[in-house]
Length: 182
Length: 201
Image (cartoon, rainbow over all chains, first blue to last red; front, side, top):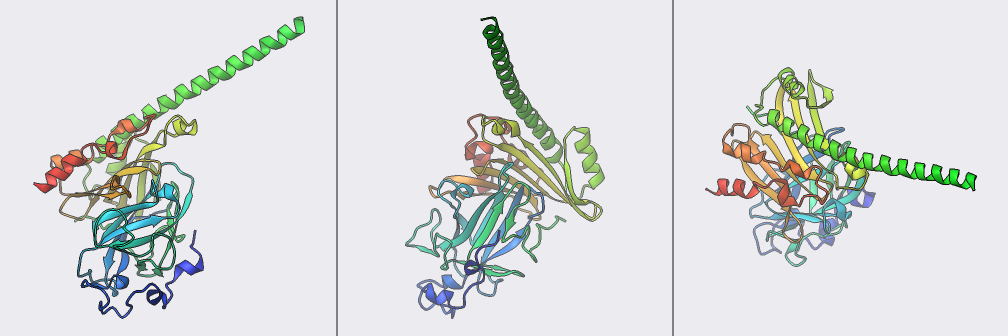
């Protein structure tokens, strides 16, 4: 499943319309990071065809996609299909600058959902006051930056025990599987 | 009168047959769930001590000797995944229990074991996952729901860690497979608190 075009590539004006500071100077925010310039980047992905579960490790980076944020942020995921993240479609919010996404279920034939992310300075449940990004899959989300596929404000998930797809991909191109141990 | 008696007898016979078949199916679903549980236990017995770098042939031989069913995805001379699923399929097809199962995955690259992932999960509700990675430090974490309750538990186990921590990390509650009420998130891996305590020392 691929999200509608509206959600796929980030509109250059998106950050402005979201009230962010696309110049990345941080001048409109009290902290060191400008939250709207932070990107969620998949760093490992063990997705495979026919595999029941898929582990994607997302880390939060600055606009360059490689430098960690200056401060600690907590990532929360939001799903339009609440069954994918019961009871109300949200989960996460306790890792420092990271979100571990385990996609899958047991012997399910397929469920679709749109996923997006918000970040907050406080851990735990999503708080509309302290969080950056929208809990719905709209245009004001923390952007997912992938090394090959591009940037996304919203992801389309197909959850199935016969291979879990994100934006119709079984694995993010250019993102390595967890590496072997020496 | 004789004809209606004859019809009644047939109806009774059919109803009895259907009820018997249904009871037999329900009984079989429980037997299969218990079998899945036993197979999951045998799988863990083989996989927990398996070291990164073990050859594909040696791994397959151990699993075969233990009577563990596996599926191979990919070409094992290059890269492949060995997957085993132990799920209470017939119980949830009959709506007797939520789908709960252990999914074991072993990745091979150039004929050597490079990655292990073992997940005990209940439908979309919750899961406990143990993965062995390059990290030299083991750790636990969890995704919480909007009320702060853990839903997805993650244990990153160092492939070099062969202490008591490993045993606790793989202490999945296999009785969740076939449990009619379905396990709560914290029941999937009852040792979670011990794992967190061990790390905080």
